[in-house]
Every structure is written in structure tokens, then in C-alpha cells.
Image (cartoon, rainbow, N blue to C red; front, side, top):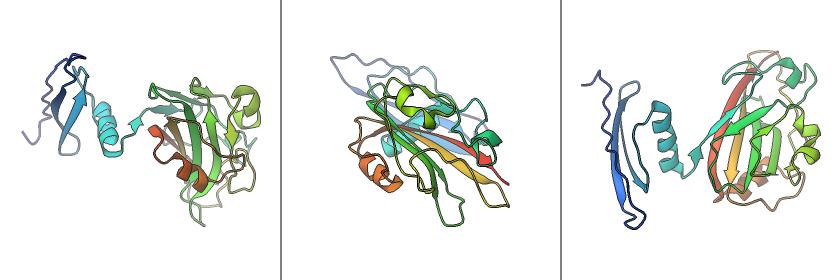
Length: 218
């Protein structure tokens, strides 16, 4: 059995009146054998893919649901095109997301470079994005007020309150993390807030998270 993917999923429906918690045991081999035991109220489970298992693991470990964030211009783990960097037009890339938590009341976006020589470098932060949004068009940082009323941009480590694209020193490519947060409330922060202030204000309000990583080197 060690070399075989095993899955034991009990499909059960819980009535709203009973509100009982059903236990679902899932065993799946992903580089060895995993066992994930979870409790799900009022949920019908027919089958779970490896991605779904990973999302559930994140939820029960952190309380935040994982949803999908993509960019049409580059794949996850792929190279960010020059037009979105200091080697080109330095405009923010188009971003799309789906399957965010239903109770989302605002989104926040944080882009960082953890490979910067001086430590994690903030390239972009936006908060109070409207909950109805499911994408940001290319160059949204410079047209944000028109596209997403109420959204606010914080201060980057470039010293300005708008997108600053990848601009690493010559050498190995850096990894750039775009992390989107689904929040249960808009944040009481002012324009120019720092990444540290954003992360502090989000504590206890994160319903879900999504991350996209791209690379760039010079």
C-alpha cells in the first residue's frame, strides 16, 4: 500500500437542522503517504483532488482559504515580461482571481521580493479593493481610482505609493511574490501605509489568501 494512492472518502450530507459535523478521512500519496483528517460541517464531499487536499490543509492550519491568482502574461514560476519591470514600461501586470470566499468584503494585494540584498523589498501594496472585483488590468496602479473606487495604495520601498516593478541587481533571478488577501472588512489605513502596517491591520480579518510567484533577473 505504500506505493499506492489510497483515498477513503465518505460521501455524506448533513441536514441544516442537525448541523452535525462529519469526519472525512483522506489518504493520498504525494511524495510518500499523506493522511489528512478534517471535520466539515454541512458539506457534501464526492471527491477531492490533490489541489483540493492542499487547500483544505491550508484552511485547517491557518483558517484562511486558498483561492486562485493568475497573470495572463506569465505562468506561475515563470519569467515576468520586461514591460512590467524597470527594464521596460514598469507598469503593473494584469492579475485575475477566482473562487474567493463568499463573505469577502475587501481585497488587499502585496507584492514583495524576498531575495533583495537588503531583505524583503515591497514593490506594491493595495488595500480596500472592492469585493466585486475579480481582476486588475495591466497598468492598474496608475489608473486605480477610476477602475477601483475606494482602493488605496500604500508606500513601497521605492518611496512612492504606486507599483514599482522588478529591478534586481545583476546576477541570479529574483522571485517576486504577488499575494492577494480576501478580508472580512475594509481596512482603516491611510494612503502611504507601509507593508508592516498593512499586515498588522489584516490580522484576524483574513478569510483567504492566494499567491502567484514570478521571476526576473538582469
